[in-house]
Structures are given as C-alpha cells and as structure tokens.
Length: 145
Image 1: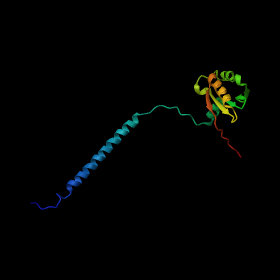
Image 2: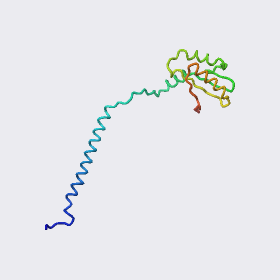
Image 3: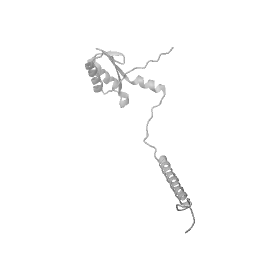
C-alpha cells in the first residue's frame, strides 16, 4: 500500500473544488452585470413633462384659477358676491374661453359653518358649468417681520 495521509489525499482536490466554485460565481456575476448594463442604455422610459419650479409660473397659474368661496348663506366667485341661483351662469362665462382641463380648475374654499346642502348645490353648479373642482383645505400664511 502507498504511504500517505489518512483521509484520501493532501487536500489538493478540495482546494480545486473551492477555486472552481469561486470562478463560476465570478463568471456568473460578470455576465449578470454585462446584461444589466446593456439593457439600461436602451430603455429611455416613458417621457414625462415635469412642471418648472419657477415662482412666476406658479403665481400666474394661481391668478388664472377661479376661486369660489362658500359661506353659510352666500357665494363669492373671485371675491364677487353672486347669488346661488346665478353661480352656474357666472362660472360658464368665466370658463367659456378655456379648452384644456387644467385651465378649468375651480378652487373651492368652504367656511366651517357652511351647510352641506349649500355646498352640494354650489359644487353641482360648478360641475354643470364645466369646472374641475379642487378643494383648498388649509391655507398657509407666511409671517414677515
């Protein structure tokens, strides 16, 4: 019988097996990153229009929106008192020249003591006039000293 270590060898076969495993792992990682990098360049995604952050456009947009303030018994359209029965006609004239949906935004401010039935009548008139209702829930105030 041949003389040698008990257990079947000097450990060279075990080292080769671990080295082969690490080589396979490195090769698989290399292929994975090559495939991922090649597809990342081709995809441009869906084009999007991002709004600009300029304050001038925001101020301009705020001026173009129609504001409706609903009180307990009264309605104001852009600060002007309008009888509830004439709200739809007034808004229809203000919205007449606007064709895009984003131009037909109507900002609704409601007083805390406004009855729900009054709110429903006014918002229904806004929708019938063709306006898109946007609720202003809270208003931020900046204190300048």
